[in-house]
Structure formats: structure tokens, C-alpha cells
Amino acid sequence: MALHGPIPITYPMLFPHGCYIVGDVEKVKDFDASTKERFVQARDKHTGEPVWQVPVMDGDPTLKAAQKTLAIKILSTDQPIPPPPVSGLPFTPVEFDDITVTPYVNQATGRLAYSIRVRHMHAPRTPAVANGKPTPAGKDSA
Image 1 (tube, one colour):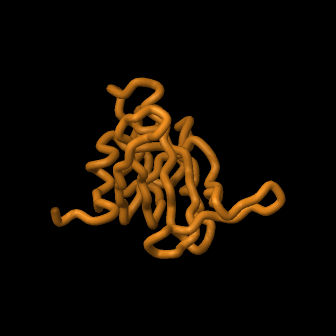
Image 2 (cartoon, rainbow, N blue to C red):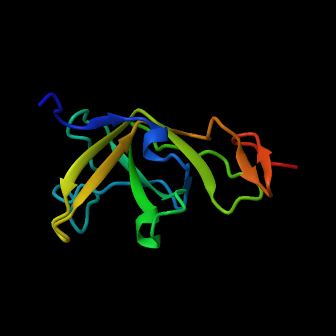
Image 3 (cartoon, rainbow, N blue to C red):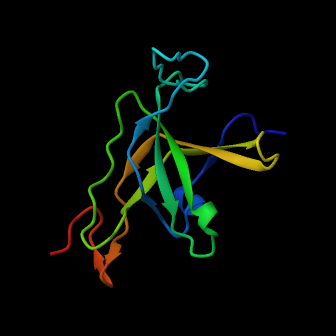
């Protein structure tokens, strides 16, 4: 099989209904290297870059509540900065670039799960909708 390691995927394939930031960008903890007294940030095993994560909500209306929120891991030497909020929307719309998906078996449930890693986070290139009116991506409506 020609697939080895993370599988590249596009944002529209992953989030056809868009997605929204629902928390803060945080460092991912390296559980093997960290101790009670010392926090060590995780590094990507392929690139060596620091790993950050941000919780997002999938905009797909057909998903069950438990399936809507997931953590996106971001590979970046500097802390990623989320796009600015959009006036009239309860959550900040976001898009990601250079996305890979790595399937794995969740040891707690025995089910197939996915680790999603990205390199860039930015405001959507298409307008968000606030109060029923299109809003330029990343801009507050007046």
C-alpha cells in the first residue's frame, strides 16, 4: 500500500459545513517526558515541531452532540493565534491548511478514531454569516 504515515486531506473534505473555535489554543503535554513538577510540550514525531491544540466544533448539522467537538493539533514553533471573532456569531469561524489525518484505534473504546494535525489556522476565505447577512471573513459587521 502506498500510504505511509499521516494522510493529507483538504479542509472542505474534513469540514464541508465549516468549523468554529470553542476554546483556547494550548500546548499539548508530552506525558512521557513531563513530571508533576515539570511540564514538557509534545513535539511532532515526524517534524520535531512543538504541538499545540485548539478545540473546535464541526458545523455539520447531522452530527450527534458528542461528535461535534474535537481537538485539532497544530504544528508550529510559535503559539498559533486564532482569527478574530465575528460580530453576531457565538463562536469564531476558522479554517486550517496543510491538514493530515492519522487513523488509530482508541484504546478506551476499541473504535477507530482520527488524529488531525494542521500547520496553519486562519479566518475563513469565504464569508461567515451573522444575523442572516454575509460578513467579510475575519471582519466585524457594523
